[in-house]
Image 1 (cartoon, rainbow, N blue to C red):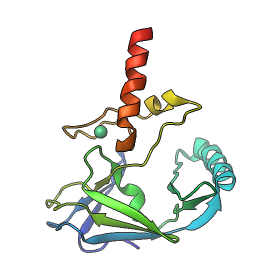
Image 2: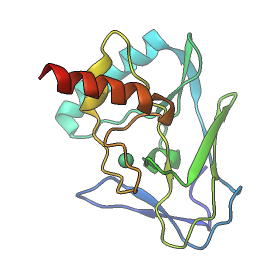
Image 3: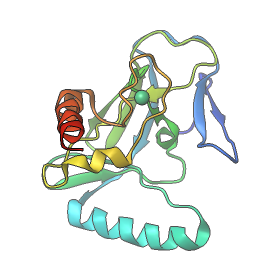
Image 4: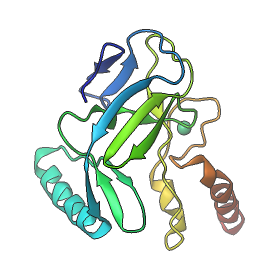
Length: 169
Ligand SMILES: [Zn+2]
C-alpha cells in the first residue's frame, strides 16, 4: 500500500528516504501494509547475491525482507511497498507484525507531526559470527541508542561480547 494522508515520504539524495508523520498520529493506528511473497532462505540468499551484483553497476541495491521461520522469509521488495523507508531506531515509535504474506505497521505510541517513523529492526546475533553486529552501527540519535542496530532482546548479549573484546585488547 502506498503512503496515505498520515505520512509524507521525504526523499533525499544524500540520506536514505524517510517517512515522516504529516500530522499528529495517535498510538495504535494502522499506518501501512506491505504485501510480499514467501521464499526459502536459500532462495532469498540467491536473490540477495543477484541484487548485490546488479547494485554494483547501478549504485542501487535494496534488501527488504523479513525472517518468518526456520524455512521461510517474506520478501517485500516490491516497488510500491513503502515500509522499506521506515528506518531503525533504538527507541522506535512504530511496531510491525507479519500476518501471512502481509507486513502491518502501526504507531506504537503517539507520534508528533514531523516526527520520523521508525521501527526496531529484529537483527540478531549470529553465534557462528558473533561480532558481525559491529558492521551495523546505529546513529538513530535516541537517548538510549545502543550504538549498533540490534533487536533489544540481544543488547545484553552484545554488551557481554563487547566487554570480552575490551578485556582481550
Ligand atoms: Zn540507535
